[in-house]
Image (cartoon, rainbow over all chains, first blue to last red; front, side):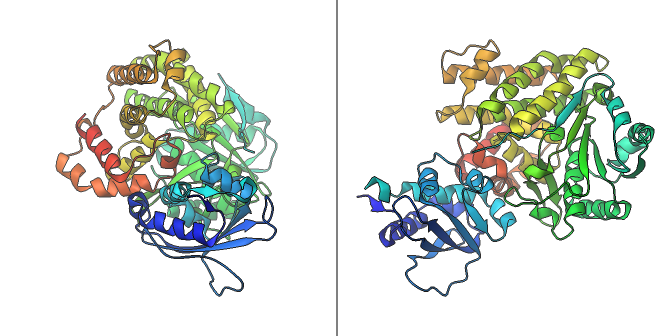
Length: 138
Length: 382
C-alpha cells in the first residue's frame, strides 16, 4: 500500500525501514544527530511540512511529522521542494549533488555530513524503500 | 543543473615560461622538502622574479599533508600576503596549497570545514596556480583535496568548487626525472581516475570523453614512460593524460577503488597510485558482477572484446593486469609487503575508512559491509 509523502504514516514507515536496515545500522553506527527535513510549498503542498528524525548509532530513535509548534532544536535542517525529494527517493538525483547545487539547503555542520556519506546513501535507500505516492500524482 | 569546472591549462614543452608573463605583486610557493632540495622551488621562483614578483615559499608539505601542516602554511601565507599562490609538486603539495589558500582567505574556518556544500568566497585576496611535477594525481585540474588527520588516523576527502586553480601549468620537463616506480604508481592513478570517472554515478557528457581519452593514453604510453624515462613523447603524453583524467574524474568523481585505496593508504601508508591501482581490477569485477558499470564502452574504445558487459569487463581487467605486470606493479596487497596477520587485524578499520570515504557513494555498485571485507580479502591474496 502506498503512503502519501509527506504524512505521519509515511514517516512511521520510514522509521521502520531505517530500524530494519542492516546496511544503515552498519554505516551509521557512529552517527549522532537529529534533523528537521522541511518540504517547501509547491507541487500540491500549500504550506511547508516539517519532519523530525532523531538518528543515533544506526537507529532512528524518534520520528514524527511536526504539527504546530515543536520544541526540538535539531542539529541539522535540510529544506527543499517536494520535487527534489521525489527525485532523490526515485534515485534520479544524488542527495549530495542536490546539496551542492542548492536544490536542498543544509543548515548545520557540513563537514560532519560529508564524513557520513555512506550513511546518507543508506538513509536515502531506506526512504526509497517506502512505497510512496506524492501529492501531485494522486 | 550541474557544473563543469576547469582551470585555464597551459601545457607542453616550456609551458613553465608562461610564468614570465604573470601579472602580480607577491607569489607564495607551496611545495615539499624533496622537490625544494632538488631545486624545483628556485626554478619556478626564477620565472616569477622575471615577471617582477616578490617570492616566498613553504617547503614543508609531507606526503598525505596533515591539518596541522596546512594550518602552519596558511599562517605563513598571511604574513607574506601573496596575490598568487603556487602549488608545486605532486598531489600532496597541490592539495595542501588549495587548503592553505582557503584558510588564508577564510581564517574563520578550519581545514576540515572545506566542504563542497558551503560558499567560501575565495579569490578576493589571491588566486591559485597548480604546477604538477608528477603525471598522476590530476590535482592540478580538480577542486578536490585530500588531507590527513593523524589524531584520527584517517584521510579526509575535502574540497569545494572554489578551491580549483585559476591556472594549471603542465610542463612535461618537470615530471621527466621521476624514477620508474613513481612513474608506474602515478600512471596507475591516472588509469584509475579515467575508468572510475567514466563509470561513476556522477558521470556526465562533459567528463565521458576526457576519461576515455585518458585511459587510452595510459595504455599506449605508460609502459614506455616506465621503461625509458627519457622518452619525452611518452612523458608528455602521460603528463597530458594525468591532467585530462583530472578534468574527467574531477567533474564526475571517482569510486570504489579510490575509497579502498584511501583506506589502505591511511592504515599501511602505501603510495596512493599503487593502492588505488591495486584495487581497480577487483572493483571492476565486483561492479560488473552486479550488472553495473559501462565497461563495454571503455573496451570498445580501447579495441578490446566488447560484445557484452561481462565480456568487456573481463577483457578490461585482463588488460589492466597485463599492464600492471609490465610496469612491475603489485597486483595483490600481499605483494606490497603487507603481512597477512596485520591485514586481517586491520580489516574492520579498513572497512570503516572505506565506508566513510566520500568516493564510495559514487561507485555504480556500493558494497555492503560484508562485501567490502570480502573485496579487501580478495585483493590481499589475489
